[in-house]
Image 1 (tube, rainbow, N blue to C red):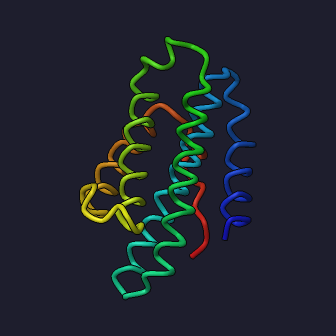
Image 2 (tube, helix red, strand yellow):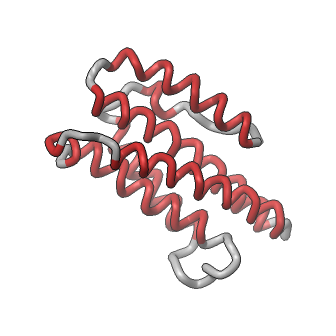
Image 3 (cartoon, rainbow, N blue to C red):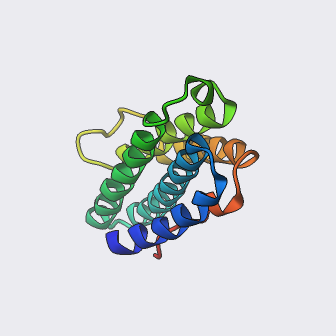
Length: 145
């Protein structure tokens, strides 16, 4: 599963290099990681609903790692102008909610955050807001089920 997510993310990042500006390229990379993380949280929530706690936790751990990767990329943007940009802020908000959605499925975090569904809804809205200013290819990274 990790290989598939990494491969899909690599394809998206390669497509982002055409953006030119370092900040835009990094935001595109972060969007790919966050989109893949969101897809994994959705799959984890479905497994959890079917009673497959172990499978759900495994996917949630991978999703949390991908969300953190997206956050790290966002933090590597050197320009303060980019960090004040609505797109950067929307991606940061997506990281927060997608990560919390993943964490809600992990042991030790039960009841710490809102429900996974609510967090995914909010995170998805933030990704949609960011999508208004980034190429669609930035958001196509999604792991296979």
